[in-house]
Length: 288
Image (tube, helix red, strand yellow):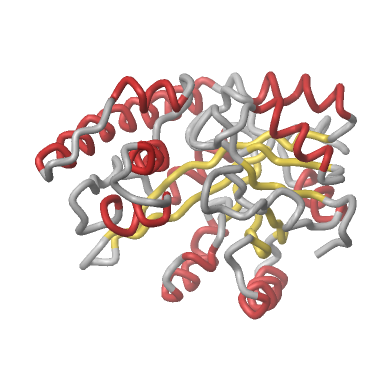
């Protein structure tokens, strides 16, 4: 990773999905952290990018526009979530716009089912409060987790997930299925650059699918992440080099929020990696 100033954090979230700060605030935080580049990669939405783009111009920070698609792989006994980041997509690409709309609609349906399941377990949450918390952004489990904290059911977001919002727990509802290959193809068709997010959070057996995903258009892998160990990062960097995948990195910052350390600026990758990633974009104007 790069020194304490400069560099890029290519994976952050805002109130457009499940982050706790607005796109403009995220840019300000990137500027204060001394980052040269910041990627905003909200879940299933591009809605935060216009405000972030304007704020980045004012702040002298380079925005790397992105999106994060949640997909699943069926391992037989269970489905495992795999997240695919997409950078520099054509934000007006109609098939991608429609895909994102369907994903957001499925999030709405999932929220209703989660609240129903929690109510059946004796925990009634205020849906209007959850929606206010989301500020019109794509709703996800983190919003429900924060509502559980606010209601005094649990002390932290991590505890909310552990006790209520993971497979087998009272409030868990699986998301609508989407295969990694579909997400990669949609990003490529929209002129973007697909990157595998935080592989260190995946079962090791899924690492064998990297060559398969590369064949359908995967261009990069998130080597550095706030939850990757140094040993994992070294292994992922070597594997990315073997497969000619561009290494990337990001904090995956959703906060600040209670129980989470400050993450902005804690994960930095060099400008060279951002340039290599941009070179894989379909738009020849995508230069830094």
